[in-house]
Image 1 (cartoon, rainbow, N blue to C red):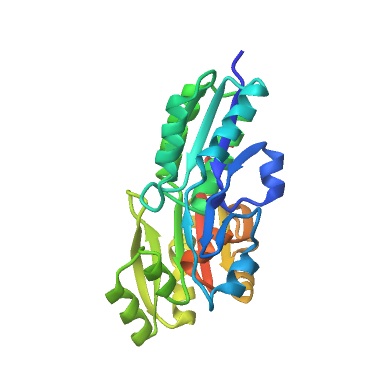
Image 2: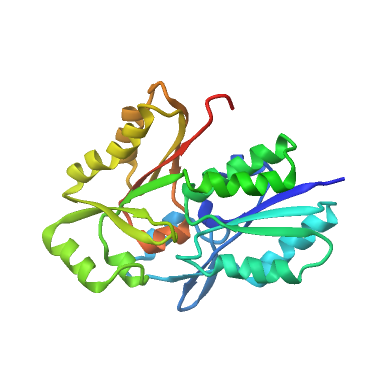
Length: 284
């Protein structure tokens, strides 16, 4: 009898209650300071990272091989025959390759690792879709095919208050960061097909960028039912404004408001605001 497990990494930003409800196993990314390393979401909170940013901007690393191995071993002991792993974009992290290499050597359970080409709720919505398909007892191979189709549909748009943290993390160039600072430009960032950051739109100042942020999502909601996630990193007021803007819209099936994980705080700094939209079949 096939018994399918689901695993991901901590960049998915799914809250603990959803992880428990859908029995999703999570391998924590690592946050590395000069004096030591911490597991994302377990040893550190977002507030811990914010409070230390002025004295040190840490680096991040993929989940440890030991943590991944432990998840797989635990699942095998619990009687799972198959496991689907959904990882942060390989264009932003080495996590996908790490999962894949360990999965290839693991015996006693079939493991498939899928590169989400996203992060935060771009990954999170894909994980929830996988959980739903597993619970509906869809055939394992069909689940894998559907997830590949689904990940092409989920879109994310993000504003950062400053480009400095993305520059420090090597996610954008020095010139782009300098221009953004001098001109007070607030780029809206999205993800390309390779799962790497790309500029979606440039706006001058926070208000203009927020107005521009919602446009592609509102446009899609005119003709598509969808789940929407509002993301924030110490931008609670702005997130509340977005929530009021989207509350009650007919085509929103579910609306989530979520704080970003400590590992993502490292790369964005305070002030991140984001929207992720997952178009869904109205019959589901």
